[in-house]
Image 1 (cartoon, rainbow, N blue to C red):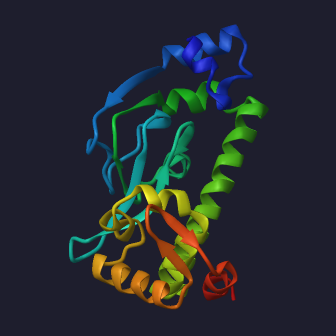
Image 2: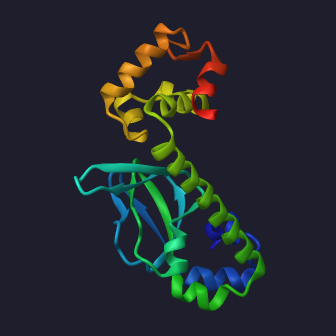
Length: 212
């Protein structure tokens, strides 16, 4: 019960509320590459990521994975599927070992949704998901491959320095060849320098590629 009280979404609950929530919840551990839920699966639990990293992706008609988002603790995952009573629109996979609080959604809805503070926290989480989906649409439909890479370098420079190019390409839904070719071009244009890590030399030029 103490673990649940530490979760921001539920920290306002009194002792009785925490006990009720504890009675309809379980904490489950997951290994790297283990699936939290599959695209098309019916939602039965509200998932709260407590530890680890979860990758959300869709699979197209060719069987290729299209990366959508990466979740870090503490966050709700795909709660819209619960609220709308629709199948999960994407697959959630752990990229490392982690833990999830699984709450029986029907019992949560029956016993807790009249609580205004909890409802407000959920609305805030949903608003964040709308922002995520807006960014996904922009990245996949509006931006060119060069613009996607420039945006990633500017916004995730430290992450870029810690990941292999194949992983970065996967996050951007690009081929490793496209990423390598574009990075080479950026280096020749002296936009960036990559030695021990990433150094951005011409920030304004990179930002202009995706901001306009």
